[in-house]
Image 1 (cartoon, rainbow, N blue to C red):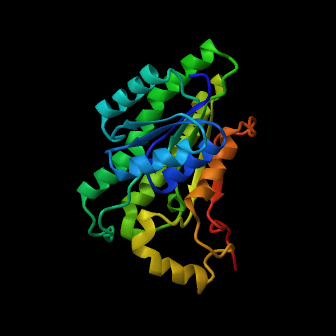
Image 2 (cartoon, helix red, strand yellow):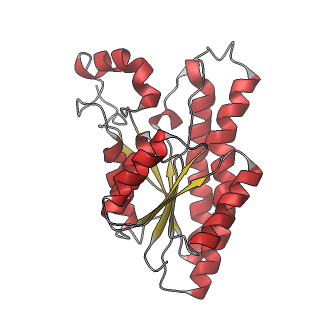
Length: 258
């Protein structure tokens, strides 16, 4: 493989697919990832292949240590390089429960997928990126973590999700600090209310907040491609003197307004 390669975890639907599509538009070859095969895989593959890049699907459960190891080894074997890691895979709690009643089982599930998995996948891929950088000084690999406005916004009915995303924010700082000496920049993107399968169940609630109660300065739902465009801009390498940076893609939700 001679062109740039991006691994986007959880990229067969939703935000992940939007990211993969925008990177493909920029001529970057795409390693799709998901826990299982299905119709969404082929749809995502076709979406990216239309942009004229190489696309492969690598099945892996990011929360499983053996599966993470196999994912990295398969990437090394098939393509031999990785320029961009996008930690996007994530889940919401199966049920929204008050933190006074939520279960350890739900906490462990969400934290394993949303935080522990990306943390240790990044560890393994960081070492590979350092090795690639040592062998080819002209390469400028980057890591992009997809967190959420839930990283700083209290939602007591899904506390495990908020904690997982707050952890991703600190994970970004830690890896940005550690990898700076190798010239590997790390970024965090914080999406707001994005129209995906994850938010479909609360559409009515957010429709009211956005269109009737003036929740957002930019009064519309976010789309997966909004997040994808932000990742693509970072992947272009136009922010060489920034690392650990947070980019809000939230319609202005983060602004404190009176």
